Image (tube, rainbow, N blue to C red; front, side, top):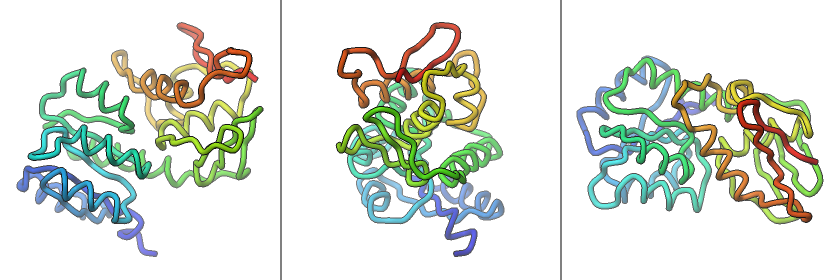
Length: 229
């Protein structure tokens, strides 16, 4: 498979001029870009196509970006980066809660967009040596990033699965916030970046507590996180 096929990107944005500009820019960076200009057709392409990353605008005609994300996450966990011209914190937080892996405000520097896309691709293509990590009744396939509680599949986003994998590989050990972000999200967290908090909140909800009621992921304020075994 050639690099362009490996780096197929879908952008769902009603700004056709922006789509054309990004298509030209990403083409020079080794990406192959497909575009959809409304939420309904974008959702259909995202579900039926074979894309490595999806770029999704919040403001779309018809079905808005958050509704697209909500429906998309019911069927697939393709890495997804959200764009918003408003850049409001509530949009960013809601997008992350619904399963977005990253977020950029518009207008954005194309170089930063490329860097974010490459980080998402690295995370999805990360090489691992052991195929399964299991702690108690939770296990994760470190290649496919599929996870289970007992025999029940867990519907995790890529970011949630990468965080879970990082914590399961060091059960009972404290992992500081920046180290976990670099390993699982491929980035350093800024002082106002709440993406790690939102991903962890979603992950803890999906995992549920241990049978004795203890939280599986403990948050040590100001220090980091650990998976309790």
